[in-house]
Image (cartoon, rainbow over all chains, first blue to last red; front, side, top):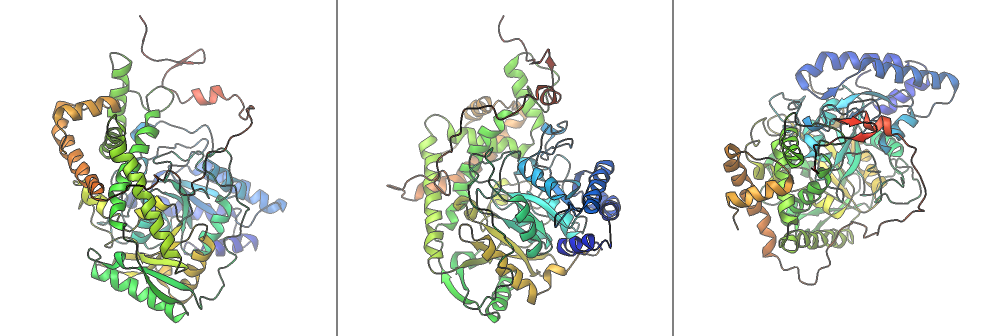
Length: 483
Length: 95
């Protein structure tokens, strides 16, 4: 049962082979058994979960169920969920029980999905290794010495370890794709504006985008059907007609033009990861895809541009944590400013403080043009690179990260080394494009490696089609760690 | 360019984050190494390029000026550190 996909579980629920309560109970038992070593969940609340499951069973009995009613899900601890602690991986919000639901949570509730718990993450989604969580690092289920990736490391580890069939996640600079790659699961980050940011704790608002992780591309499509859609409470939510993201899954790939950016296969890419990506491209060729070389010449600049724009926006967004309306407040202070400074010094971890300070600096008087405006111009160059590349291809393929998952502690002392490992994911967020990670093999050290599929704007159905067809002829996505 | 201890203290103050004397060396070093990375941008000529703020270059929507949310003051204040009579309490700012 625990290896079943979301699609299979929804069928079993519809056929009354299993109830939502039985399913939830089985997953909760597995979480109880394995979470102490993996640390994938920050909060588990058996009573709440079973109440949701009982309500889902009642909907099934009353004939008002939807396709996914009763299926279990883990939510990244960044999505506000009424009645649940929403910590965002931070001491700052350790005492925050959300009084409202994020749009993504509302959509999941309406679909009848049952919350298994709240997944661990890097504090305020800042990190590539999940070592920045106030609640401790998540372990990679494939190798407990390895990082799971970040920032959605808990979501990825939960799906990989079969503690949940699907999980919500967010991606500001690779936070869905990189952990999905490192944990061997399928993850999708939609086009910026497709999933509402309402109730999603903000990091860098012009880059943040919600998405999902699951075992298969098909499950990702079913979940995207649930969480995507216009929401007027998010000022950057796009008004578009509803679409069925699973509509093209079965399309053959004959004639598909696959772009390989030469900059993604240059120096810095580990040989074993490169071989895995080459093999994946060969599989797609066998399915009729034709390969074209493309160029994304400003790829290298995505790192400095991202590490200006994201901290700048973070410094503004995180100014709301002032110890007044919610969250942590220092216990001793001499005046209002002292209260702010102590509250924030105590409540934020070191990476969050660093990014707030970098952001404050680049936005400060006299530096705004040299840094923030300069980065936004480079952002345009990067988006234009993709525009030119997509003139000659339908999807772009490449690695997600330069290496398979590194060891816990390996890069945690050097922020810049950590930032450099984001080289293949940041450009997509700067351009606002959709992208996926799909399991494609194992590195020499036995850790999973994902293939990145980058789509054109609103090309989710096309990417999911490519991923699904790939998964019809490969079984990397069916491999599970021995736990 | 490289930040001094004094610069770091100013940035920390603007950020409303207390940085102790014991921390300032390490913070200074890390900020300088991040700024060194960011500095790579200056090598690129971006004259005449329009800055990009939103991937679809859309402008913000306007809506009718009507009430859309119910009053949930009690629920929202239940998570506040200190409230009294429906007000958020902060240290005295006016003598």
